[in-house]
Image 1: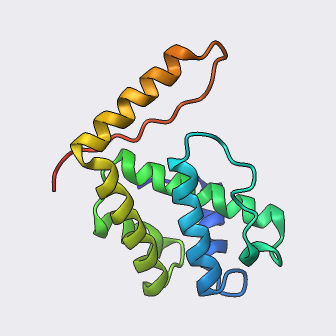
Image 2 (image 1 turned 135 degrees about the vertical axis):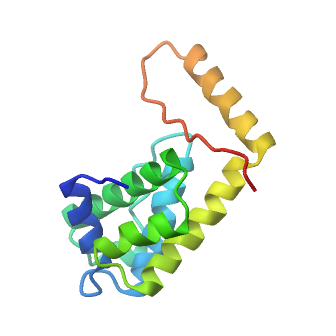
Amino acid sequence: MELSESVQKGLQSLADATFFDMKTFSVLIEVAFRSLLSAHADRSVLDQPEFKALDQKLLKHCHTAATTCILEGVKQNADKSTISACLEDVSFDAERTEVFYTTYLVITTLLCSSHVNNFLLQRSSFQIHSRSQPQTVFFLMCSPEI
């Protein structure tokens, strides 16, 4: 997967245990996935107790990097070896890579089941057609290969 320099730097910070202990890292990964699945932008998504001591600029940068990596992985239908190689390139250790991939696998498996995928596409289509204001809509494309 090709990621921009800014995304790589954000992921390197996320991999650094001096910034993110394992619990904080796990919560941030979960929040990144949850924020992509949310129907509405939730400004409080980063208002977790685990994030109170973190520099907010660093937190937002790492959250953006994680969500970008997730979207790129889904876009490319990346497998474990592709994701692992990408995360190892930005200094993720085996434990952090496993947390990221396990969460990625659970979420993409849920999203890729055909009835959920059809529901999401219909819902997205309805939102686009029923709103008068332009908005950004993200589509997660899944191939039903399970």
